[in-house]
Length: 196
Image 1: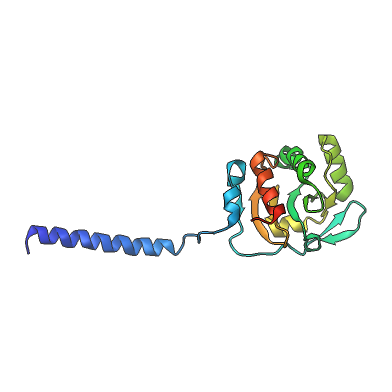
Image 2: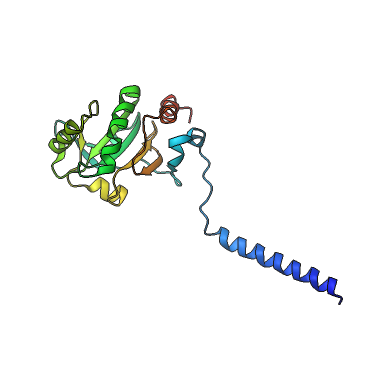
């Protein structure tokens, strides 16, 4: 066999090995998620993580301002941005004004920012922190046992979940975001309208 034949066989062998290696690598790659929400994931919202497998909003119980309990799953029927925060969490403080601004712009019976405080002090701790930070317009929710933060976010704060009208978790994010940015408002308007 001439040198050209050996070269061709060598190139073919390298090609086959590369394909086998790629196939092996691909099995560990995450599946591509196709979600109409991607259209709205621009600017600040491009940092969101889409929910890879369908999941409903949790059954966790939080306390309302009057001390009465409510399951997060019982709040469905509207779009929600569930945000887990604490007064001792500096990144949480950084986004509270943006969360309140989003609530002021879009809040109604079809949308709510559900900011759940996980301080041990419950509703009083949430009220004190937001008053100190000058944040107004958010309803008070608390989980003083911190169960939601531990079981839904592995204790990482702030963590936010975007829930559609049917109670599906559509996307989530760990860390602060500018939730009142124009692209965020467009995303939540589309969810409210049921177009995504």
